[in-house]
Image 1: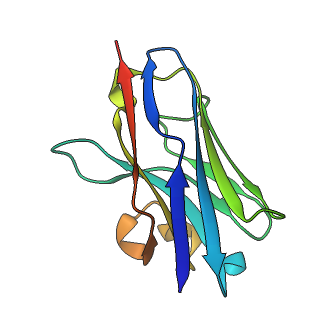
Image 2: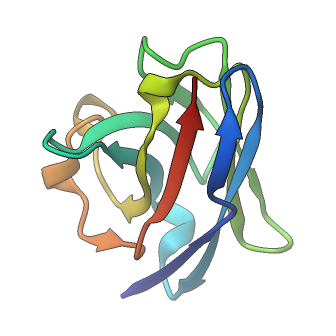
Image 3: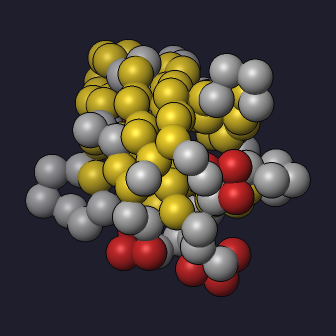
Length: 125
């Protein structure tokens, strides 16, 4: 089992930046894909970004590419999502997720079996 705890959400004006962190613990997460998903009110949970803990390859949704950066800190067992040039449509609850998913499936929330509690990000216009 993997434990995930997010932090860093908040309220920001459009064009601003926020940094989300996910503290990771557990026995086997170093072979996992670490993902960030988001869910806006009335909408399905959607993929934002992911990183392979081994190797560090990164993956992004088209909607955040060029604005968001996902990274990991091996020493502190954290995964970070740096969000720049935020837009009102980025408003959502952001969730950290982890699982040993294949690359072909890492954008599917149903393939992840470890989730954090979520952190609210609100972008005002």
